[in-house]
Image (cartoon, rainbow, N blue to C red):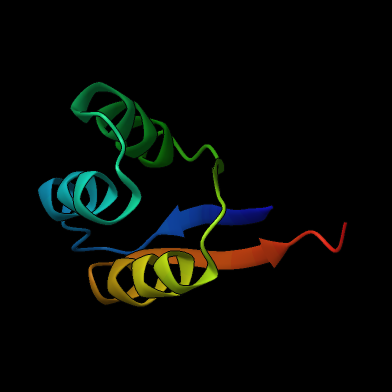
Length: 77
């Protein structure tokens, strides 16, 4: 299992773009994506689990571009 950890955000974070990114790349619902963005803005760490490493890497690259400090954690099970 791959975990995308949204640690924090930088000034100028594109909130709508982050919501859309979760929907388009990760297949999250609008409600779940918005909850994740709101949690991040409240300085809470957000962990998203995904099975596809390529999608996780794509999400990570795009999220970094729009102002999210994030990382990938890969379980070695």
